[in-house]
Amino acid sequence: MKKTNKFTILGAGLAGLSTSFHLGHESCIIYEAKPYYGGLIYSDFCSGFTWDMGPHISFTKNEYVRSIFEESVNQEFEEYEVHVNNFFKGYWIDHPAQCNLYQLPEPLRTKCLDSFLYSRFQETQLTNPRSYQDWLYQAFGPVFADVFPAAYTRKYWTTDPVNLGVDWIGPRVYYPDIEDVKNGFKGPLGHNTYYVTKVRYPSQGGFISFARKLADGAQIICNKTLQTINFRTRKLGFSDGTQIGYDILVSSIPLPTLIMCSVDAPAEIHEAASILRCTNLLLVNIAASHERKRNNHWIYVYDEDKLSTRISFTEGFSPNNAPYETTGIQVEVYGSAYSPLPKDYKDVIYKVQLELIEMGLLESREAVISVHVRYIPWANVIFDHNRQSALDKINSFLDSIGVIRAGRFAEWKYLWTDDSLLSGQRAAEQCLHHLYT
Ligand SMILES: Cc1cc2nc3c(=O)[nH]c(=O)nc-3n(C[C@H](O)[C@H](O)[C@H](O)COP(=O)(O)OP(=O)(O)OC[C@H]3O[C@@H](n4cnc5c(N)ncnc54)[C@H](O)[C@@H]3O)c2cc1C
Picture 1 (cartoon, rainbow, N blue to C red):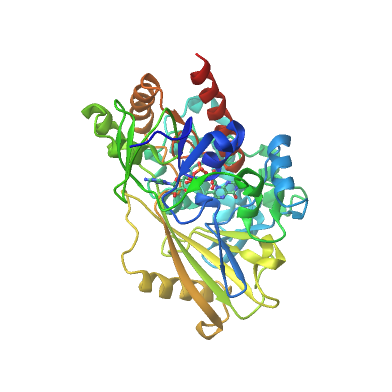
Picture 2 (cartoon, helix red, strand yellow):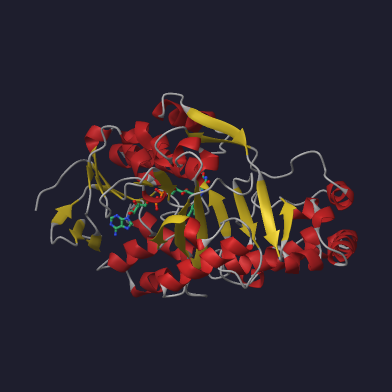
């Protein structure tokens, strides 16, 4: 068994690539399970269509991250304001729906406003929300909260809002201003209240192109799936039977995977890892022979009798993502241990197509040029009430043995691409600290 470079990195997603980039690629080796790098930001190419692993755009305000993305694509990127819509029982409501109540049918519209205003007058009662449900009731009033975000939570987070904490929310869910809701009840507000405004996306080559600067020169060994790890002897075992030693280890693979691979982590750490929950994602990519039917980048679907949760149009991100006068419709369907994904993918494809036809987004099944499905086992960390204490135990164990973590599933947080890149940069700093102390 031979020892390799100073720094060993598990996973070649954005966080792993960023760690290697910031340490200097020549001193790092990255082991990646897939035949390609990029992880969640990988882009697939198929008959003129570009498909990302779920809709990805960059809305970072961090200048450093922006410069890395810009240089990766030689300044060739699209920049635009996004147009987002909501579908609810046959109605189209601009996003965020709570500021566009005028598009709701009566009597729901008036009930939403009354319940919102009532809950705001009682605001002091709810200053310490114990669950996402409390937060939603306070922010929107129970009527809107139950009909819209609670329904969407069950589809996207795959569990009831009462089962989720509030530490992940930040700017991700808009806490509306009273005047905005009142004015949006009467008609269009005339200004955008969505946290995502101007976004960037590579002109060519899909979202993965933004990682080119980080990946150039990286020493990545693909098709290397970690299977065992001995923290005491510092040995990694891979699915191809090889065993490799490490000096300083950075893991950007999912925390539960790392712990489950461990042959010497205490039983209570294995137990803690088994408690962490995340969503899994089925992407249904449908290429259709007509232009997109709505001028939206993506659409949130609230109807709980529909599998489609979010629908995006790839050529809206860059016109080069789909051939002229066609559309790439990407539909997200979520599952988890709380609410497993359907097993029959053919049935999912069939149902999703019918839903798109019903919503007027697909002309007919005859208009479908191709369909393919991608399964993504790790999509979003679920912020359920068990998470924090389990995470604390695992983190203090890994800290005690000097295993550094970078990225969304290794930190077990709601990280976007900019956060993941910066998480890799922080991991690099920690590596240097380990080396020199
Ligand atoms: C549907 C969706 C849409 C998103 N949209 C946006 C967006 O619009 N804007 C934005 O900024 N962010 C978005 N994000 C978040 C963004 O994708 C992540 O922040 C980022 O890609 C995470 O990078 P990472 O390196 O931490 O993790 P990953 O990309 O998951 O990388 C981990 C790597 O580890 C590898 N690995 C796993 N197990 C093993 C093993 N046993 N052995 C070896 N290798 C292994 C994986 O193959 C993978 O390459 C979105 C996420 C999702 C799920």
